[in-house]
Image (cartoon, rainbow, N blue to C red; front, side, top):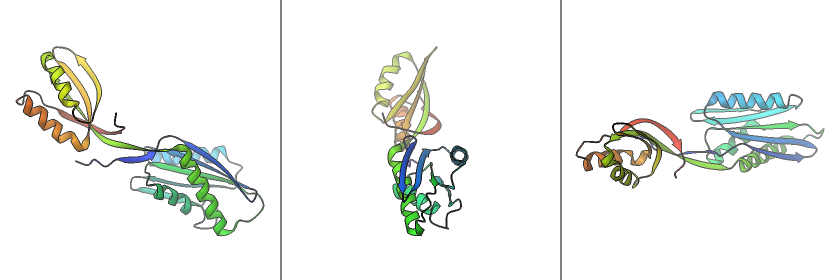
Length: 207
């Protein structure tokens, strides 16, 4: 079972930089998919319609994109994308808006400025690691509930809720790397009477 963690931004970040009278404003945000990344880019473009350039880059799984938005090729989008790559973050979009100050920065100057603005926005946003969890459910008798709760809590588990009816219906999320062992363990200690059934997956933080 795949258990790779997701390293991404913990929230949105913004960073301002002035270089030879040109103002650079970096925006960074976590996104769930490519559509959200494109929507964020468009939002920043609308916010700064009067800016000469809104350079952007994003990484969402296998989807990767960068745009110089009118800057000389490779001086805007590439350094911004490199910031994402160097930080090892996924599901991330960065837009750097530039208001031209009348002084040419040259290719090297542009690369450095866009890199600094992007890196500053990432730093302001913060980086977080989410682990892959397998969502599961099981049903048990009232008399077995406390024991099974004790046993499942030996693993990295998030308790998602309990419903009480004729039996106890329990929803949990277990670290995916541990899910097979937990499922087997519960089956063994109950003689197969209780079955833990996987129902989905998500990224979440360990509690």
